[in-house]
Image 1 (cartoon, helix red, strand yellow):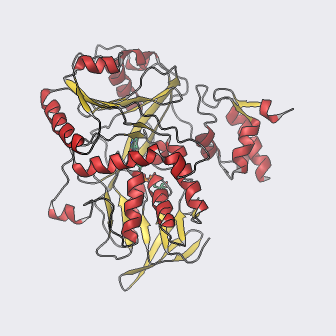
Image 2 (cartoon, chains in turn purple, cyan):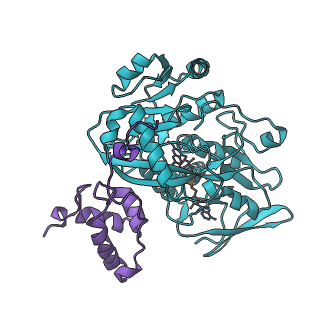
Image 3 (cartoon, chains in turn purple, brown):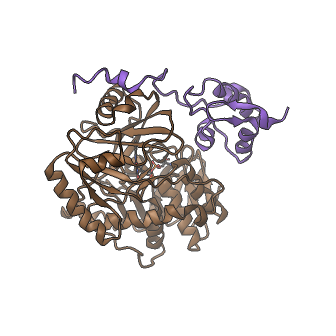
Length: 92
Length: 381
Ligand SMILES: Cc1cc2nc3c(=O)[nH]c(=O)nc-3n(C[C@H](O)[C@H](O)[C@H](O)COP(=O)(O)OP(=O)(O)OC[C@H]3O[C@@H](n4cnc5c(N)ncnc54)[C@H](O)[C@@H]3O)c2cc1C
């Protein structure tokens, strides 16, 4: 299958081909790749793509998936609305 | 890695890379950049990336305006593969008292002399510019339509690519551990991957700049301070300008991709290297935003994070060569505005290192702190 048609990050609409491009550009860590092409930065917070990317990276680097450094998990875990967090305006 | 260099730059943030690029462009041959993690992993990749020209001192107006000129032409100047995503839809600075508004008027006079196209706005005019703004407590404001935002990751990438093309050696995941001296002069940098002989070192280590100072025996008047920030889900563009207030203490901007970025400075934040997010920030941020920009309450928070400001006593940077340790250069202490003046900082530091006349008059030395000659800049976050 054409790798341009394999979508790896749905939120940011990124294909496997685009991911391979940045890896070929020399990026070695998930943290860097996230920042250059925004993979995993969308509303699902990397739910799918971050599971896939370490496999692709490990393949390139000839290591196991365990050897790939995982990015920082950032709160909140589930997207909450600002007004829910604000909890009403009474206290302001 | 090179074992000998004309200059070693410690720090692969926007400042270190802008300096490396400008030095190489001016013809210096062997330049090495050391970055402990990946490029942009420090404050640069964590920042709001707002670019503002509305300042309250002549020097800052000039630094910011000339830097904006460079951002405007960066794609061509640096021949970037990726567009830096410069968005120029202005900064709306809000005043919450008449006293604050008076200060803003003084700033406007200064900005006009520097050809910065800012203007005063009434609360009603502010609401025309940002229709969802709650102007209940707003006393007035100023607006500069050419202020804006650029993608910090891509600006880093642009400087990186341009520097590499000119032969700069950039070593990521390489830490400077010590700086060696002989008879008061610098002789080299010890890294975790080997030694580099050099007589010029640039401290561009952001929040960690005090540690680099210690390596040459200097106790620099800088301290790290956590600043937090969050990003929401993306929505259709509906807020052009950055909305910012010093007194209400907030900045909030919709980035070109659609998400909103927002933050504020916690006045009680202690000096530390802590880069963890806090629940307190999230709550306070949500309250502030929901009150000032009510429709944003509907947005979901996608992520929050934190980075280090590098703070000086007057919240203005130090861009100078050390008098005590010749060959030790510093571009540090940028507090909350190092991204927006990085392009000019890169040029000025390169000129300083090469002994050229500076293209802009700056007085950002260390001695001002000893003499108590602090820069009185009213417009800082
Ligand atoms: C939340 C937040 C919001 C901000 N918003 C804005 C804004 O809207 N506009 C604006 O202009 N500015 C903003 N800033 C400030 C701006 O981010 C900084 O002033 C700027 O990025 C400083 O760049 P730098 O290259 O000096 O530092 P950094 O980007 O921190 O780079 C320093 C680098 O040095 C490396 N390093 C440290 N020690 C060593 C060592 N021993 N060996 C090797 N490498 C080392 C670090 O890993 C780091 O990558 C914000 C900052 C924060 C935290």
